[in-house]
Length: 114
Length: 114
Image (cartoon, rainbow over all chains, first blue to last red):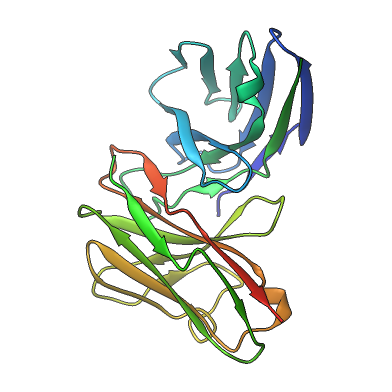
């Protein structure tokens, strides 16, 4: 089955700097890669997603890149703000198949230093 | 996107007893899933809740321990049976309206077994 690895497990950046979180996946049939943000005591919330027919997607300060050949995808947050502090999870899924379940990475705890 | 109401939000249970967690979606969803999240850890998929048929369980999870119902496209339950302290965790349900929409989560159930 699918296995998603994520690193780093913790990341501390100065406010205003950029943060990058990287993930790899094992199943070449995966075609949908969402990123979730989870604040303490809250439910995970989707912040951006990318499908395998696209190499990059951007939404304001957040961007995601996908390298299908290497099975790598990354989250980039620019101009970080205190409210970006949270745990971020990458995930992978096979949309359009009977295996459309979402498998999550281990998570990255992002802290923004003022 | 649709909204999932999950209850109870938390419970403290005696070992050997069972707890049923409910998720109600405010619109029809094709897919529903149940996850377990240990504090500070990632989301581990327990099973896919199939409408009108038996759930599909992931490795390490069995129906006798985690029976799941999904009688229609807006409702699902997860029962944690014969609980032990090792079952203490947060349990989350998620749903997807279709393969082109995001997966969204209930607010979670924090279970403590004493």
